[in-house]
Amino acid sequence: MSFRDNLLKFIREDVVMDDNVRVDEGVGLIDGGVLDSMGLMRVIGFIEEHAGVRIPDSEVVPENFQTVGSMERLIERLKGPR
Amino acid sequence: MIGGADAGLGNRGDTVAYGLWHYLRDSAARHPDRAAVSWRDTVLTYGQLDERSTALAEMLGRDGIGPGHRVGLLMPKSHRSVVALFGILKTGAAYVPVDPNAPALRATYILRDCGVSGLITTEAKLRQVADGLEDLDSLKAVAVIDGPADATPRPSRPKIRTWSETASPDRAPAPDPAALESDPAYLLYTSGSTGHPKGVILSHRHAMTFVEWGAEKFGVRPEDRLSNHAPLHFDLSIFDIFAAVRCGACVCLVPDPVALFPMELARWIADERISVWYSVPSALTRILLHGSPERFSYERLRAVLFAGEVFPVKFLREIMDRWAHAEFYNLYGPTETNVCTYFRVPRPLGDDVSEIPIGEACENTEVFALDEAGRRIGPGEEGELHVRGPAVMLGYWGLPDRTRDALIDNPLQPAYREAIYGTGDLVRMLPEGSYMFVGRKDHMVKARGYRIELGEIEAVLYRDEAIREAAVVAIQDDEIGARLVAVVALDRGKARTESELKAFCARHLPNYMVPERFDFQAELPTTSTGKTDRVTLAERMGAGAKGGA
Image (tube, rainbow over all chains, first blue to last red; front, top):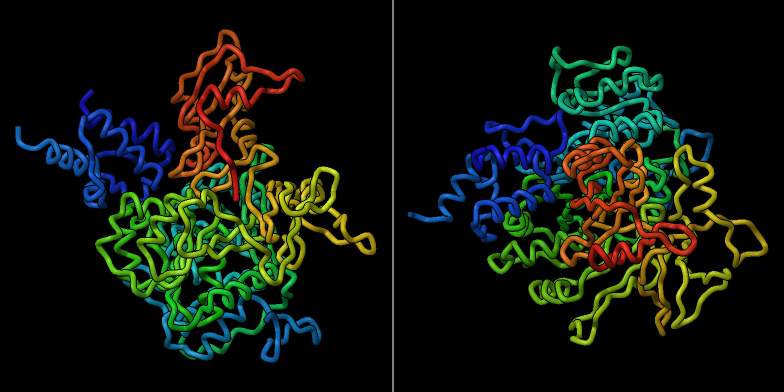
């Protein structure tokens, strides 16, 4: 599974834990009210553990966590040019 | 204080009744153009809040909702929530705020348990609970705030109305509902050790006892801007909304996405020019540790109130240094009494201070602690804190036995019978007569200010047929209060994974009650009397948590 699939699975199964709530690439996780503060902390923990980056406080802002796509872009940016 | 020279006349003969709705009526009459509620880019004036809530009350009234009824509130927080809350109160009914993030099973349990007559909700939330409300006979009306969508399955019998925000301009002031200040104003559901949440019934008088005290103690004025960080199903919101409306001040609702991000929240408090902040300590800790509050100026912030859990002193000291011109107060009280003691944190907070007292009783309330023999304790001694006075709840909804256990006869008053509330919190009396929180008598813990009965989580786990034994322990955590670990022993031949058990819990419990970790063991350790040995379990899993306050 790709990192994106793993992240979606984690958000679905360990954070949201509710089959009635749609979680996919197009869903606004923040504006849609999918993530609460505890959920956000878990997602940050998952990314730091599995993507090998540390997310500084200044990057914990809504636009970086709106979708899994924006989280991936954040990770790429934090990893820097290779 | 309550009532007084300008108190309204209730509709029950010549009885003088003064309810929470009068706060709005009076402030709307005094300054209709002043801001009452601010949420994102929307500001409602007192005139608008009064008109719109009256329109909603009339709509609910036409469907037969009035005194003696309960109306559920199931929607994300916005300025409309405040309209809804006053609309319900103006009918004389009590409002029942339900966590909009709660799983559908829990939300429907609450709405059914107290037999709501009405429900104010959104299309999305109605879709989640519609099936569970289908055969709820008490339900007369459902008001949907965001318009009709025919595809939504709806409970078939009650009238579904779309709540139009437009109020007619020539509206007459709402008549006083035929309710008394001793009638229920709201029900707050908290974690219950038997596996279901329990509804704490609170009257207008109860709320006003606290609101009047707080408005005076913190000198709330029309120029103030009060934060509302707590959700409406959490009793911290009572101060934010009703103290603001009582004093003609503005209550600024923290938008949900802002509350998630410490950097945004730190900016929001400055941008909104908040003057009185009230939240659980963990929200302040997150701002301090992850919000870079040094970027902003908080010159308007004059009072910081915190309640709901123990504030680690190292973080309190740091945020007091950061907000050097604000006064800090530790407020204490369970949902059953709301705030009943307070402590003004001294400046400077010396390096030798390692814990913060819960302080002394609010001026219109009495507290004392009793030892195991029922004797009132003195300085240096420990006992269970008890509360007497008008702040004490009416009881638990539909649970007479639990109510009798919680509201005991005052043993210090042999001459007359009076119900007082035993908090279950153990305290130590300090030399000057105030109190320090020590721990809990039972298995209740706090995480992010939320009350969590470990027994409720265990009761849910036992509903899974594969589980033979289950115990949930709380691991102390400075930043959020407690982290939950479930230790389970499965029946022979049965298999469950951690994610299956998490998903099972999440169907019945709000996210903050779902254990973060599951530990599988062949059997749980027991004490010599055969009970689960929680001390050993907590040691195995990490350090135990201190619980409430």
